[in-house]
Length: 366
Ligand code: NAD
Ligand code: IPM
Ligand code: MN
Image 1 (tube, rainbow, N blue to C red):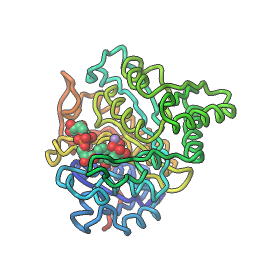
Image 2: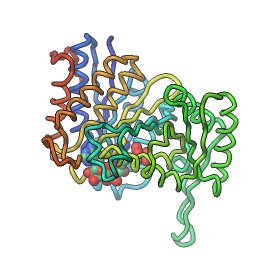
Image 3: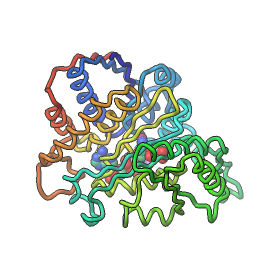
């Protein structure tokens, strides 16, 4: 198959991890006789530096007509004082919104060779396998903040959801649970927020259509606690935008590092955007020490969800597993044994663990 892939490396470690993922995809393309054509575009601080805005129109256009989009990360201290509307993060929110990517799928899968790298007890993390389904284009992130009032001492952010927005993400949660172990935990703050009460109503309505799915409601504060004390109670978690953001970084502790988590930002059909859960990690950028596996596993999600390439996706996931089993890992994983390797070497090890070490036929343009 021939596929057009947009790469948005962005800022900080974004470019380093993107290089690793591209090398892995090139190797897979060679092995399966696919042609992946990469085009790079600007987003975030990189776009601010080059074009004065975090999301140039031509980036949006290119993404809209591509087969899939890979995104590294955006943001960093360099742009922290930029006015709110032009911050790098606005570029990320803008591309998600303009492509209509309302569902962010964040699998939290523990690799058995990494159980000792989590600060949590082995018996708690061993075998955990959770999918967080995070609403991505609504809620507090997309309210219009008020001007500062009362001499700059008062401000309002609005948390708004329409029933339709809740229905489609809740459906995604149920559909995901049907394809996994049939358990759905809806996380909200229905004891305080009206938006959460509507959320709970929708979940209960939709539950009628999915009799095979066992539904549980949890308040977000308790969910945060249970996520690290009894993670194996969870199968699919569906939740609103900000809760999903916070819970997924917390859940990464189960896997040993934030650098391990991939994600897919999708809509019902059409283009998908694949991005690791972590940010631009300015504290380690430019040192070739970032963990590229969240990005590499995101590219596996792209092959599966956007291109229907299940075998290829599984092969990357297996190669990642075998690489970790062989003891290779980046410095963020706190393991007493094995060998610490850099970002590019880690990607190389993954490639060596693919079935054949074929030379790529992928083409890189622009
Ligand atoms: P971060 O996720 O960038 O980093 C948090 C911690 O995790 C840091 O100590 C970092 O070194 C570590 N870490 C993250 N990714 C890693 C990797 N691949 N390998 C090894 N260690 C890794 O969060 P932050 O420091 O709060 O934010 C930094 C910037 O990133 C901010 O500007 C923020 O807005 C932005 N951000 C962007 C995204 C995104 O583009 N999707 C996500 C989160 C944060
Ligand atoms: C993420 C990030 C983003 C979010 C920021 C950078 C806007 O934290 O992808 O998890 O909160 O969605
Ligand atoms: Mn986040």
